Length: 171
Image (cartoon, rainbow, N blue to C red; front, top):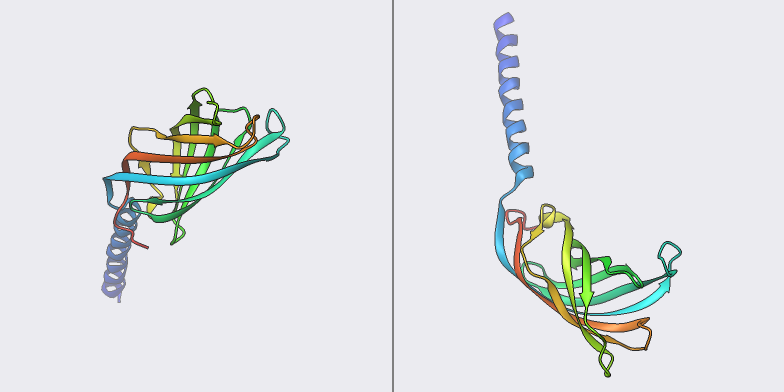
């Protein structure tokens, strides 16, 4: 009886070891770095937000295409007059990449347009992008303001760089 209980505890200890090793390996995943191209088109509109310095924020909505994600929907926010904000890209399967960014723009031309560049300060993700990071390079494009004070407008931008993510999870 004592030998049987000893063997049972031994088997349970070995099984627990396999489960622990398997769980650790599964959560780490297989991180790979790949070329990453994103093309987006979005519109923005100012809405009230008492937490922003001028009481207004831009809500940014749009669509695009991203390698390793396919068609994407996007939503973001940035306080009016601020060079910082965030945007989330959502793939068709629900996996997301969220960027917290700072931006810089040129002078607005007579047609209401200017160049804009977004630098990635922090990146978060869900699903296979849970451990995501982006390589060097800005998301850059053109902004067209629909009005003289910049309350509404359109943004067309592209990113050409790299992405590191868990390629083992294809959910």
